[in-house]
Length: 426
Image (tube, rainbow, N blue to C red; front, side, top):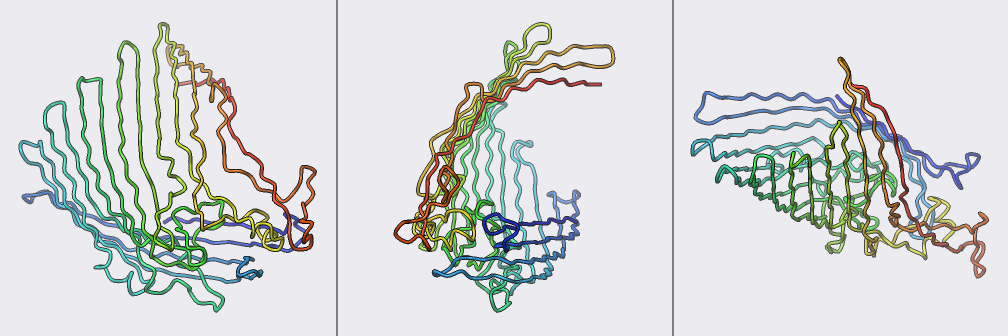
């Protein structure tokens, strides 16, 4: 059993003496029973299993939104109960003197939200994996599979103005991810390991917002609760790339780990155009090294490099509208140019020195750590405000009653962070 509670509220102008523009409270409670059995006396290893669950989702929402030039109220209460099921089977075996390992499986899931989700045939998900030992130094690995994921409770439990479940129709389906991964591993020495892996993931039925046409995959907490709106399972997505990993242990007292990933992550909008997801940074590089000096001294360092994340410009026409601004007290993003801008790359160096002192029954570890050694300032998405440097709202002289001006503030983060500490090991 697990349970999650979400609560969010907001007052007009952040003034508690004024009416709330948002009052949101939701609970998700899941009760699950799962079983599996492994049969080892057969020509192949067979595993069968399944499970049932009951989920209860409650939601109380009072919110104001700006649609079609006017302020609209959203007020609904949800008490949604869902019965779900899962079933799976997997066979696996080893061949060629255990050098070749094969696994084949199939699974399905479902729930009683609508007829489409009830049918287990609609969620059939096969998968296959293989690994082959070429030599004592080379391995090959491959994985192919299809995976089903239930849409978020916030979408399933959303109600429209008529008090009906807006998404309880056959247009809302399970999200599917079709994945293919191919990799090779090389071990030239006992203390050296290298891997190279390529991956491709294709997403189907990803929920699209009916109101703004964007994929829920790229919406985060900065946009409020994700999914509490009318959606349609018509979005697609893809993520693909290559990853390199190497690890060298105890080479002249030196340990080095390198990880580099080049990838792309994109999802379609309502027009079917692929747009970068909010985590499409393209590059991820981590270099980690440590060196053991005499007398139990150790120095370690980590350098990280991350490509620039995409972000979305704001809708200036909507953001300068006072009635619209007062609902959220922030700028509105321009969904027609979703994630069309990109931040610069960012990097950071962290270093640490450790000294261990051994006693008969315990060990004293003294350390000093410095994060962001060279004080790199990473650029963030700009901050948009309707106030001047003195905190006064900047009225638009052409229409001071209804319009305002927007000031753009460059935003940066990153500072040198030193730490000293003591660790006692018994």
